[in-house]
Image (cartoon, rainbow, N blue to C red):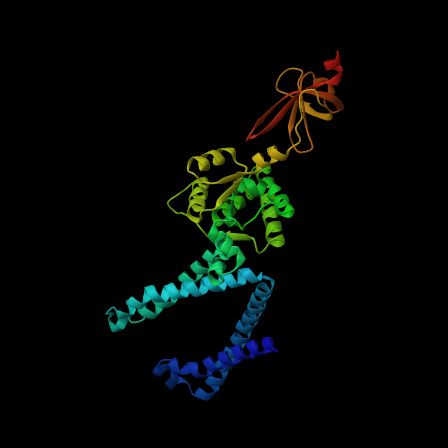
Length: 359
């Protein structure tokens, strides 16, 4: 029923504009028309056709908007509504003085135009702010809740917003972290990170293109599985060129946490007093420890850089360098761990075939 009302309203509006629109034609043109009434009905017919087209577009857009509203979590809907109201209030307070300025009559359109554009900008900014600090805004509405009281007392700390970089998205382990529930707070993906992902996915290099497409697939999966937590933020900084510098500034401005697997970005952000969560550090903390003397079955995949070396990998991707393992390339052999090297950039294990170690 609502769809029919929308379409009929646009048809009637288009027909009305066409019927009365000929009055806006120059007087000379109207005088040259032999049958103005026929022209009115012809214009009304064309207006109705255009109204039908616009009505179908409006009806489709309305249904899409309605579906998004229904799928949106309640707290996000409330926080965005609150951000919208705050943005409009700020716009009215800041733009009110402009209506007192003396403006010539020929430029009188500037005042309503400024009001419309300013209201739209502040409304969008308020909703964007709500996406980042949604729960904090809701605490202002309900300051008597147990969570708010505990935060005010300092008993608990609110979960900070996590800002994702390109390496973290491509890595993919962020999805497993969310599935296990160990990661709290909202996940914010800046627009410039999304653009970098797209550039990597469009690269001419096959390996880069595969990594970029993998990152986009993972991001789409996160948005589908966690629509209330993953937010694409339009933040950008025209005065900065490097994506890493933009990430650091954004995290500083929102007092959030940077989530990455990039070793260099980790160091740069730490120097600037930015809180960083490196997934590689987490993986090292929970990775099973292999001590010297432990044995394991390993498939040797390729030759190493040094003579007689073979290279294999554990199930979690840890590289194992096997001395005297070149002869076993392509096969599986039991090795004895001799030592291991562990850093924030990754981990490496050194081993020898059990046969040569025993000998």
